[in-house]
Image 1 (cartoon, protein in one colour):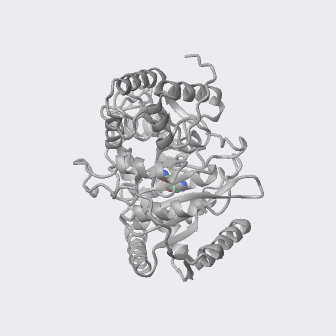
Image 2 (cartoon, protein in one colour):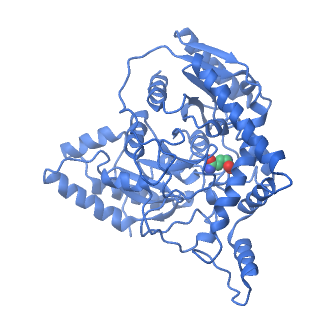
Length: 479
Ligand code: GLN
């Protein structure tokens, strides 16, 4: 399709809906404007597939229905992109991997059903690291994604396409997945909001599994209110995820400003890997919060050094099991050699179909689960996880909020970390904590670095306390 440039500016769902009701905007206009922007910004490589014709048709249909007086759904005409690990019936689903080449979804993820029921327009699938493994979006079989603010830099990962799509106005909101930071860290690198809900808040049915006891669908947006609304829509009720809390989250309401009890980990801010300017900026902001009447305390957290190792032991173990299903028989890529006996066929297919990083993690995960090493690695890491949960529960007896940096630095240059996986893993130090403990976390885009890139601060609350996390975020974003 060919698109001429359109003028449409998105501020918030509420403003958009008002404009639709007043007749100063239409869903069709919105979709056309996004399609033309996607076309102009192809070099960013944010999308793996754009569903242009059907998005336009849906938009026209919604315009007709609204004009005929049909009440609007909560996401009426909201243009949303979804990470290419979320199943959308009759559409391709690749996990940015060759191994799922030409695979078409047979069903909708629960989050997709819930968004469609509220009249969202799903405009396309978004690029990511293969099977959501990575922190830069450079591990994609469909090529890297560029940070729209500086094309020499990565957008973060693994949900890099989802972050850039919102950052560069290629959709209104987007969904990603966050197993160890894949929503919060790219949000931080791109200067937008990124929420990882509590483990068990949002159904994982139809989300391609990386590490099932960590994975959650997360949200990218520009305003807290929009993120809150999308969370309300996708959360709760589903018969297909036994780890899910069935009740919907409390409905978003703006709370009067209040004073919070805020903690941060001393070891986290003192960490030698943390960019000094990020450290100073966050400390300065906490001093301002203190002056405004909040309690902000540095607490001792001696478990910090164990969280990245525990995360990589447990997630690779789960990944090695989850990814066993890609065998070349059931779906996706299959090696061209037809003469192989079965085991050779599996080996060849998997060696050819998976990328380097995914293979590294399958091997690592298989190793930590192997009979001779299971107790030394897997059991130990489970014990660390339990300790973290207990310590976290204690902290939330005295505090409402924990804050940490989202990432130790601003967005890296493309290629900077690719030859050094350990250093890339270590940069997950501030985000994996929330996944190990299951608590919700959000990255708030509050700051700019002298190097020209944005960065945020991460806030967390106790489990299933998203409403207060969002209210805190709203208050902090206003100041
Ligand atoms: N960077 C982390 C990893 O590579 C996070 C991934 C994620 O959250 N999906 O595992």
